[in-house]
Amino acid sequence: MHLYKTYFVYIMTNKPRGVFYTGVSNNLERRVVEHRLGTGSSFTKKYSLHRLVWFEIHNDISEAILREKRIKRWRRQWKIELIEAMNADWGDLGGRAGGFGCEWPPIKSGVTSTTLSPPTRSAATSHKTSHC
Image (cartoon, rainbow, N blue to C red; front, side, top):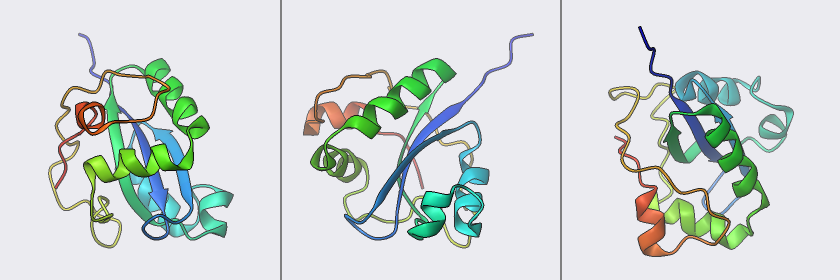
């Protein structure tokens, strides 16, 4: 029996266009709760990064880690464009009080690219993932 694994690359912030934290996890809901409780990382605790504003779903951990590392090296403006292509109003995709309030995990839709170039509107939408 082959088990289907899911990995998430995600960005947390404290406010629209605020401080960013990019991470990877195999359980995004749990990880967001950890960040909100101050146990996720010292960086997210220090800057109160409690708002999940962007994520991608991957089936391969190596791909997810590579994508995370690449996004961490991106210019700030590229990250803003990536976030706004999925979440123009910078809403908290993590739901209220740490719960997601929707079916989890979200449905994957075409997450394949791992380029270093800045996202364009058309390229960024290829990373778009369903969320509530």
